[in-house]
Length: 364
Image 1 (cartoon, rainbow, N blue to C red):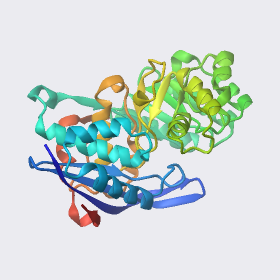
Image 2 (cartoon, helix red, strand yellow):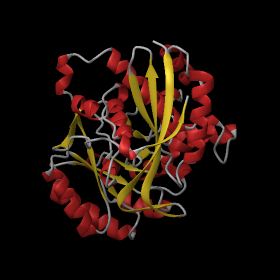
Image 3 (tube, rainbow, N blue to C red):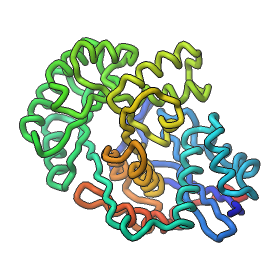
Image 4 (cartoon, helix red, strand yellow):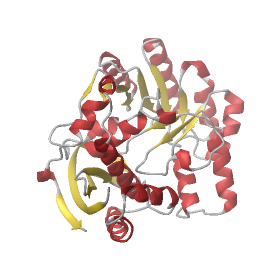
């Protein structure tokens, strides 16, 4: 199966509410889709949508780099050869790699359809809640009523005592109804994180994600409080360091980040923002939890497909940022019902892209 053409399309989608990012806020999601066509004929779609303030590459850079890669490494070559190239190439921006791998996987799925039994594969999802205590209480209650069995709560935006009070109330209200994850996005000092983690028991939550502004102290925090932590930004930093694109690219920094990641309870992987943990030669059996970064239906569907394989199985992915999009590039939004997604229905929906939402950037 030979790759004949690659086409890049840009899109802009409004958000339901402004999203805070480093340096400001965004009111729309700008991104790019790549369509790979083969001589079968078959096609696959992937999404390259760097997130402003979080990605190391800009959207313009992702569009330009993907064009160069399509011309020099993809068109005219067998699909299997492209997959091998992507496995060996470590310097591709994460969003571009995610788009190319997603498109190739979709092509592979079309060439080798899943057996009928897979029609019943349901991917349980993790809901997202954040804001003041009353808002969070309402959002968690709504998520549980909607069928979600896992909810991630954003903390670190209010005082640590307010977060402690809120967490206690949630555990009282929803004990046995859902699993809780707390995400501080590196908001706390060591002492504040110690107060929060010291107020909960390890068996009451899945984990506390990125509690410290200084991630080098995460292991010390665990030793003091006994509450397991998950890494997200730290995993992204390690990915950038290994690719030689981070702010600190020294071997000592890479070794320090690797040690932190390998001690984590869970690895939160956002494919748009970093390389796969499975390609980092990590000495850990910690589960990988897939997470979205405001991708459209194309990127979100790819995350759901990834979550149903390998170390991601039984770890509810977090694609609730998809619900923050007020529109989509698909003809119909991804079908999500009762806190889960039917993988076959998601795959079918992701094959029907709405051309009216796209503007062609290049074609090779």
